[in-house]
Length: 420
Image (cartoon, rainbow, N blue to C red):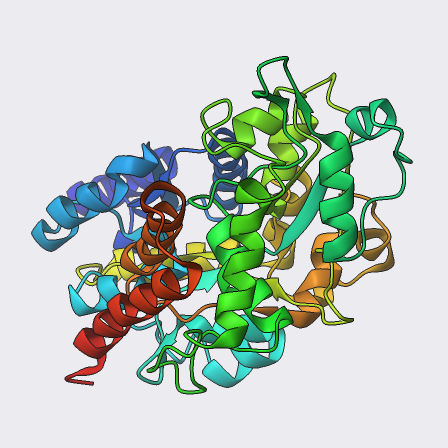
């Protein structure tokens, strides 16, 4: 009788959810990304859907200011108290891997051959020493964004953006307005190099003027030649010679364009969601202007990886979540909410996307885009910022500034590859 009563009580407790098999226990994993409102909101939406499909898994979502993000990672992950799944810029991967923050994606769940079949080729930038360490939900390219109202005020056709670099300079001059003292009040275009413009110089202008930024194996800087000098000179002359923009106007290029005062600027597809939230901004998107018939673009992505200390049930839950984040469903929602392009051609290259007046130019740009193989993204960006400052603030020649940038960046590459 006692035995029957015990069995009855156990069955009752199981039905009530008080006790049960170990597999019914909820597993909690933590996801980190830097704070960007539309990304935060979209991840929360995806987590809600994921938890419905996987009731045994809970995902805790934390965000941090971009400026403090890597510092937070460095202080938390080695101690095993940070995220299980982490969002990071692909250019940080070598640094994260060398520091031991990430583990290779298990090939039984993420086959390299399948990844390279399903994703845009630029995803190979996440393959380090033969292993994939992270995968993107979305990818980015650059495009020219123009203010249609500023075009109309300058006597330009608001539906006809420049298609070549020469046209872009011509339009920028007409768009630029100054006060009686000669101060720029309405720039024709932005000229800050520290946002997306250093990518425009490195991967677009250098190539359009006939060169390449690096050797095929990415170990040697190759822009310290005439193509590099000409490409950088074109950028410098926008402010120095043509005077169509001012560094730091309205603090930065994004804020300046959002103010409605700027005619044109170059930015990534991720900015569309933010611009669409501005009700009074009448803007258009076009492919990056070509030069002598040569098109080029820069592609990049933020990817999701699994931290090195994630093991056991948390690892299995993290694998499921990473698969969900790289699903067609997640990519479609990311495009809709954030404006970044699906990382799989099968999702991105659809008629409704290609023909979309906002997303279409970015997607077309992926066809001829290059993803810089960064080994230290921060340092490699800084060499171009320094080169620009040396020319405009110190009077250094373009050639000398480019040569010094190449020398500084080569040291970064040599340091990374010395034991590889």
